[in-house]
Image (tube, rainbow, N blue to C red; front, side, top):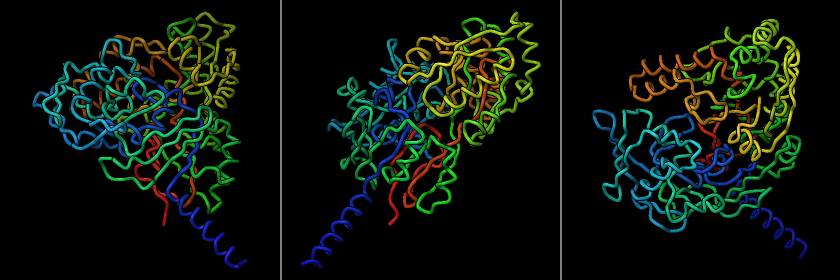
Length: 489
């Protein structure tokens, strides 16, 4: 009987191990404020739902390529103003309702409506009409040619939602993706389960749990204890060397679209003065922030543009570390003794740790900062929406998002007419070389006017069980795409 008991126990352990091979538990530092990517600006929303619960007409691949999704193909008129999308057939939403062209029309009309709450409403402003041709075809008409429309429609803000369920997506998201929403225990986790009625290729995982662990020390402990299978954006870069030396883990280092900036409120004194903004830029020593806050992970940037993009322009001479020049500029601007301002820091490591280093660098030139640590929801409400700040640190993880500098209602309050004109010309330009020239002009303008102080491109540093396959190395968008994730056999 004793031997039988041991055999039974071994069998139970083996069965449990097999069960675990069909699920995954992932760590993430920030809890999303809601689960509707069409109605919230937080990157944490897309980290959970993009490509997992929700799908768009197009999507980003792991290499940044624009791939078909709910649109299996599209045709473009000769003048570039009409896109005709042919949709996949047989797709359904998680509540059983059918997906068709009416859902596309509802989604795009809702996103571009006057009362739209979409955080990236500007993506849809060039659309003048959305027409249903048939259940599987939809026509999108633009006011001017826009070769970037398939790119724009790949954003999480452009995922397709159904009129029947859209109002409740913040707490009970209903999409067409390979995973269904199962539960959200606020303050702890979000649970997903496989959608066995998925229209596309089936996924390997039966379930996935996203656990929220904001403290870097706790994240390290949770990985070591086996409570997590992966932490795709690991918040404690100082501990990566320990995982690198342990064969049980894989350290995944890649790039992101995250331009990390010291944002300045251009609409209030003293940051409405370009001399003050330039003084701030010259006070910053980027490498010290990368080394001190990110333990060397990150690439210095000199404008709001990803350095891995072929159109990136190095403008280091406009904002090199020069404290003496910074003091001279402050005196010229009327602040010979410096000034005091607020520095509001959201939870990510780059902000909290980086903020202390930046505060010390600014102090050297006479700028005192009153640091306030704010939770993500408060940052979105008071800084992003309310513009109640002097300085803040944030990483803009949306892909190719230099166009935000043309938005009149954006939180750092810039939108210079000459920059808006460049973006309008860029939108109407399809020639690659001409687009590159315009992108270089845009980068140069915001760097010369020191709209913000540009710090570094956020690295993607993840840790995973060595047996896991298919996690993204790079982050062309802020997502934890589980569609290709599996356990090694």
